[in-house]
View: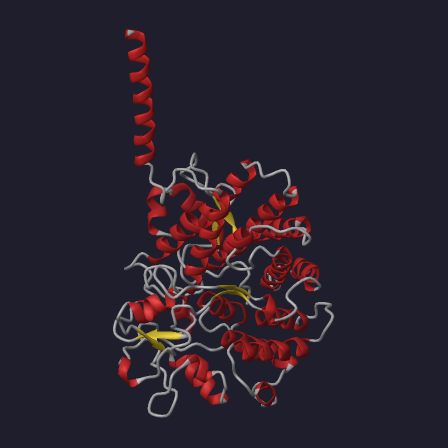
Length: 473
């Protein structure tokens, strides 16, 4: 009898223990997360970084001189140290999108999917992760010049070495080529977990080919032969129209609204206004996109003097459409691809169309994206129509204008093509003092000193004025 009572007690205890364990389990924060939601998280965190104007971790709309600050002008004057901006950017990319992509890859590789699902679906997921990882690493290189890459994201190695930017670019090209070749448009991938393309593998193939073009064009002054080969490999399979744009659909509720809304509206602050750099250029061209980019002030478009204090109430503002909570996050567009192809053709790369044809299509696509009319009349203006003799100026300026809201890409266009001419901020004496890269995080000098010193020597000095390897002229 005693044994029976003991067994009943043990059974009841075990059952209660199981219940208590279930009760204590946090269903909203599981200990193990599947790979697919981690991929979703990586998409959002990467797009958040691209879209943000948070002065602690993304000041590229200021660096590109699309916007300026109204009261506190430190960031518009390229002060990276007060808020430790370099460290915040560096940490965010590795801790958020890149870490999530790595964990997604690990989980998906280890997952046994139902037998009725094609094995190619799993393969597609892994190749798409590779494409988004390449996209993120290119941005890191374009910001710092050299970053941890081959030794990055290894929890067992807290002192990762830095890889040279040119070596990373070459490896990214090889990996993107392999990923595109391995994708099968006849099979699905992430489905609803993919908030950019809804799991449509064929659209990711186009994204990968567009990424080849972007990587290739960036190398044009550094390695023309590799640049042309890379662009040529992507041109036939890249974006065909704006329907292929890589856009992230934000929602109207927190925490899933566009960071621009968070910075401009939800914050309740009036920190940013359009900069006179872009406003004056567009006024001079009578650019029809102004209505999409700025509000009117006293019947005109008026930008604040870049890098100087500018009263919020006396200038144009960011329009409601751009500062709306559900304004889409922009990763890659058809217009962008056409601008890159225009540049490649202008450089003499053998492509299906002429530089003028690509350039005109790029401008038209930008007008369409922003809902502006009159593209053909605009292209006929003497200051706008294509000129092979002035291709860097024409393509550089129009590409920069089209990238509005995408600060890093606008800043990179200026660095690569030297157009448009930027204004001199209050604390900068001449154009040569405008930064052309971000310095390595300060804490790397103490926490990863040997790697920091080697990286600094690798790029020619950890200075704001040290050019990225592709910035040859």
